[in-house]
Length: 413
Image (cartoon, rainbow, N blue to C red; front, side, top):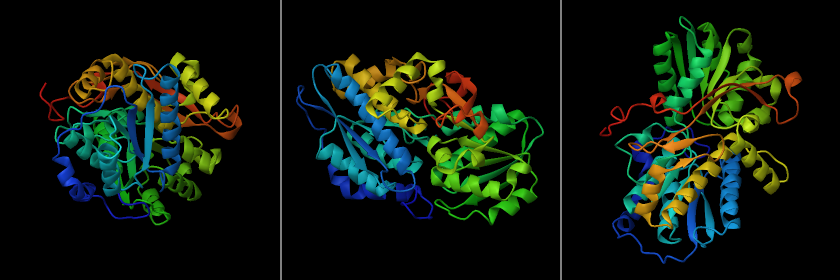
């Protein structure tokens, strides 16, 4: 992903640029640590930049996961500490901060990153150093054999499973679909997922328009999209880009001609622009607080978060911070400490229910197998309160069959 505020495309070379300075460090042997010291979890996330709202929510939820474990005595009596660092939504910065967390702060594991490209840079550092990394941002690439390692775990949904769930609820055979896509890894992977789902359903793509990351003006794209006369417009972008694109689409009258669909519908962006703009927009999600009527773990998570945050509710991407750190700490408990190989083994065997129902990490690629929500933004008159943002259209149970196969990802079966 580009630097915050930049519109340049990220490349594999750019994503790894920040690693060269640490090449000597990467060649060093793994560091021994005393068995009775504080358990330290590194947490790089973009506290500055266009994804800052989601990042702050992730930190709050990660801190809650740590607090709840510490309140019960920690990991075998060892206190847990969360070390948060601002990766500035930049791959080189993230690599530098991750190296510091490992070499200077001597963390036992890393959780975090909120970008497809940034998480790959973090993963390059952690896997070279033999440190566990639990990624909490959507990515298909991180599960593929070329980027995977035994230390790599992906707690977030991935674009393949997200777009497939949304497509099942919104597309039908013969529909015409247009795509407005952020021109970086997240957008490209979501587009690929939608087109794959369309092929299965029998829906046709009538046009694709790429927009730069961090675009403020979408006015030049809207007439072109409307001229395609699609039944559905899929807008694949994230953070403030999502809010800006949907708002301007509505201003141009797009919703009078077609349905707006997004791969991931974001709590914070819906709040940023209000119910009228988002009314009727459908998208996927890993979490919505309204699950508390269906899930005991969601109800418990909501209650704990409200108690720690003045009655506020947890958000979708915030929940990743809770489940990413929570699953790691559960594995450390099962492993009896922080010895890396034992924790890896415990994570591979872990059956957990932290926020919404049963989850587990698939053995071949360490993707978290979990449910996918499909949500529709409510109109203002249907909202019971300010937090009653979405209606749950579907809650697809987690299944290995909903993922790309291990062999397709390049793993031995």
